[in-house]
Image (tube, rainbow, N blue to C red; front, top):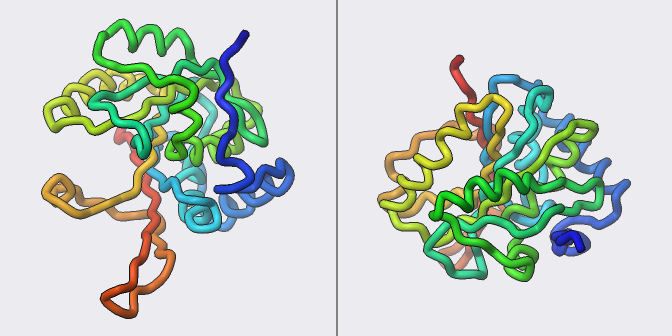
Length: 228
């Protein structure tokens, strides 16, 4: 029996009504006023509920030209499951309310054979929201295109292993048929973020802090372009 990852956060983090979801995504993407670019090889977008970050996330996905892309690597941080590694999905299909995305099983096998990646079971996969929040956008943008996904859960990876995983994935970045969708909270605290300079396509906050006891969450989108 084929192992299917259900859209476990549909109906709570975003609507599970297919018509409503498709309409919202299309409206948010059109509202950006951005045009598709064949030079965009990857995006970084938030993973909060769509009522908070959907419009900001659209500024990333609106850049994607799906014409020549056949494989999408989806990277998302682990919020509930501890692992010192990056972990691959065991599912064969990722469901969304507006269309399912098949997993590139052969690529998963190739990467697993490297001996550096862990594997996440379906329970862990469905509990995690970071990658799922990108799936409806990707399903919308790649509608009608033959594309497969490679989901990668990013654990509490050491600086040394960050470099190692970066090296392993770099050869896939070089392939113009591959695309990277990176799910990020955009936290800028600490020395690891101090060297990163980026101009966001869109930046939004859930609210403005008025007192020292207030808190606020920010959402932002970015796109990575190739120069060739």
